[in-house]
Length: 128
Image 1: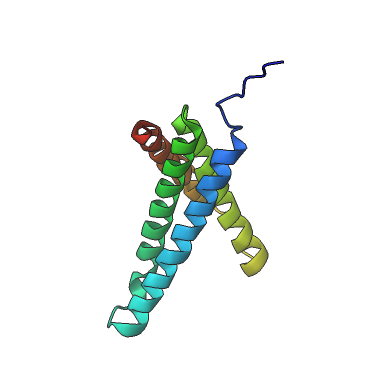
Image 2 (image 1 turned 135 degrees about the horizontal axis):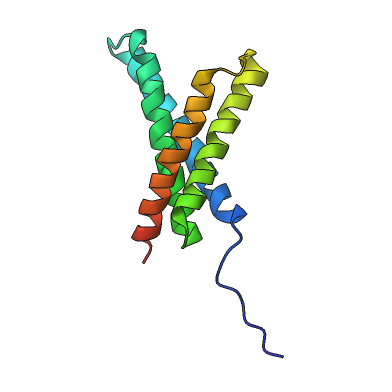
């Protein structure tokens, strides 16, 4: 009996790969910025804007990886990766630091979806 293998991966596999890359990029960005704070005269007042840049780049790269792995519907895989990334960040803040649900948290989820979806679109179009 000749069984053909399906070329399409389940959607969870690209999202998981994107999440691994997103959190890896977040960790690398946090490490680099903390080293900049420690060894230069960079002020801690730049921390909030640097945090947003690190999260945006992490969601973008995670979306790109998810889109590239999915092969189709990159906006969907990238957007889902962005939403999951933001929700996990919110859960860490809620459980670890007792932060409540705020408008800023919802805006982070919406922005992470948009940036992740953009990354997914780029990722699908870079696949050879």
